[in-house]
Image (tube, rainbow, N blue to C red; front, top):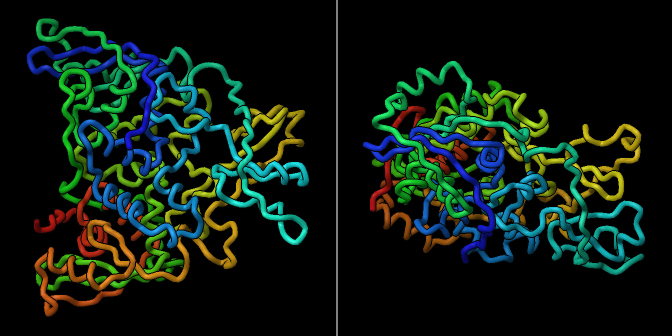
Amino acid sequence: MAQEVSDAKNISLKALVDKGRNRVIFIEADNDFIDVLFSFLTLPMGKIVRLARDHSTPLEIGCMNKLYQSIEKLDVQVFRSNACRDMLLLPHSAANCHCKNLKLKITDDAEPTRFNCCAYGSQTSHSSWLSYYATVNCPSCVPPCYNHHAMNSQVNLSVDDSQVGGVFVKEGARVIITDDLQVIPPLSAANISLFTKLGATNSNTTEELTFNIGVEQVLNLLVSSFVSKTPFTETLLKPNPVPKLGGVNFSQGKCIESQISGASINEEKETISVKLVVSKSKNVVCYAEVGEDFVNLIFSFLTLPLGFILKQMLDSPWKGCIDQLCKGVLDFDEKFFKSNYHKELLCNPKLIPGFSYENHLLGIEEAEYYMFSDRKLTSDRSIIPSNQSSQAIKVKFLDPKSHGDKDTSAQGFLKEPAIFIVADNLDIRRVSPIFQLSILNDLKVHFTDIEDRTVHVGKNEALRLLVASVVSDSVLTNAFLRKPQEPSIKREQ
């Protein structure tokens, strides 16, 4: 079902257009549009997949769509709580409390500062619990003292954003954004050479156009930026985004090495064992037999903010140019941001409380929230007045994954123990000989041509899997069998 979006407002953009080639050279943007564009980095991948597949021209992002479909098809009984599947299919952003102030919003999430609590527990406990979901029980109501009560009472907490101006950047900020999403200050010395390179200096071949864009155009821009080097042209002049991201030459070299601090598999304390079933003649992974720990890792990719993912693949091959946006934010002068905190929201986005789990191999952190002054909520401690700092309370968010689970050592979204089959394209199902046979038949691989190989997944391999899942349609093969810089092999149709 397509998500409803509101198109009540518009933003005016001035664009310099190459008339002969019918191409946008660059646009001039103020803080309203800069905030909208930068907010893409805060969106969880699961949210983007849902928006992209419901788009007028559906988009496939590597194997993320197949991963999303696998979660939809899995029996809810394999999840540790009813909320777990919602956390993966409808993930929240830790920046929702800021993005609610965007002039154009491509998602109409539930009010981001409206949380669920237990009406009984909030009256009997000095330190109440909050939850994003109403289907879990309040931990303050613990038998035999109390009956279990659902967290189905709502409380509105005003999120303090006392710094006036835009959402992420200061009011009055202006930049030039090229067709491939390079973000450049308007007075940069590099502009002259850039204008010459882009063909912007010939007034006979260029013209200035003004566009009023709404939510639909912003969504088109997001989708196009995954598959096109010219998303503004695709959106403003000839909206026709390429329908698939995948099959590009796969490279994991610098992007992986830059994120690893030198730890080898043997040096890592936590690893996941995976049994690969490999075609010897084709040197491809047919499928993997795995436990719930590996599937938890793969499922968690949908909860990750886009900005976190893009930082892991700044040197990867890319059909589109959304990575330029990440580079632009990293290089953007801090003086244009409202504060260093607001830049960190984009450069190092975090998960909302409860969406991570212990020993998560990717090491992404959860945001922390503090309540102060008449139930104001903030994740930026620097804005809490000094005379209220000692009274500020760190808010406790209930982890919907674990509440009610008798096994306190359990981790992730899935019940333990469980065995799954993971296909090379991230089609994931509970262990099934029928599914295993169908994979081999589809790949035209005979039983005599397969062999088992055991691999161990640490942080390095987890990052390889993440990158491969976004840019490749053969995730396991590219992550475990391909060397960096080696082209990917597309599966046979």
